[in-house]
Image (cartoon, rainbow, N blue to C red):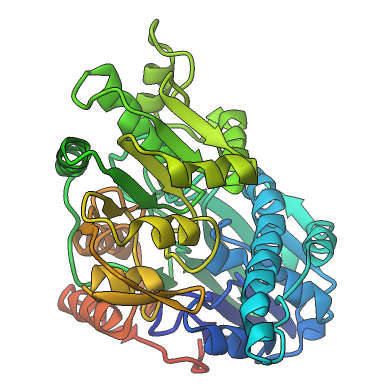
Length: 466
């Protein structure tokens, strides 16, 4: 049995881990690397293995840094099944097509400027036709239902509590008379958050591959996050400005909408226009409505209140699909909240909202999710006073705020507590992935302090024999 780490190794994006057992090659996730444009294309156009040699892909969840390069994998020769939960299949149907559309739109916009400079055009990574073809290989499976995916390999998906349909991938493997249970956390959610259930604790684990996005710090509590959201909205409203929220279309957008809904009902923020400006977010919210089996008890109770017909819709909220309606927001003169994708400000309509609003001191750009290295979002969070958007330089005069209490990732204390619960049933070895080096090393140190002898922080391309 062998594991190789081809993405999200001492970094946060591009999750891709290859397990070899009994001659079969099982790929865990196939995400997009996100960062500088040149590196984006270099890393995502080339696989470190032959896609045709992969037997099966096990997808943990639909976020683009875990699923976003599946169309390229299929285009380059992968012919096997792609297993995912039913909700993840539905989300990927929307998200992969949207990813292709965003790539094509951004390439067209950039190419206008490149043409004027007599530079060669850029090509999108893949097309909508590639995304649609890839969806033909998806196979939906429910939580907690074991399925044989390769010779001697049985997979069971457990609820990760991260986004709708997210899964911890549990692999029971048999090779040369030896039995090994390998568990891949995907992205692990937080306990006691609204909308989704808490992460499932897997038992009798031999080897654990765990994420470490927030392995070196703890989050605000949900109550602190809501207090900060209230403050930011009120202060920006008093300045007669707009709150611009870059948010991932899956999970974060719905959670922020739900929080704004509660604050509006409680009359803790003024009634003001709230726009979700992302066709993908609109589609994803519809998918959320189709999967109540993933909700936790709090959301079920909220939805059953007499004054609430829809947790993700209320009178002052408007979902925007049409591009002309999106452009009209540029001329909005009254205070408003605009939620748009992508969450790391690397593509999509959020770039246009930042371009048009970042230079106005009345406005606030509010980040509610993790910002990877070298992304535009990270530069804004790090306090850059000038940034480039679509190749043009803009001065940053808007207030920049960060709320990490809405993060769907477990923080350091929650990760350690989760591994502690798993450790009680025989855990032998841990591989720490999906975290920048400082976060991964910090979590690894915490795990060693718990008495786990074999803890590794693999680098890109590293391999391990079990």
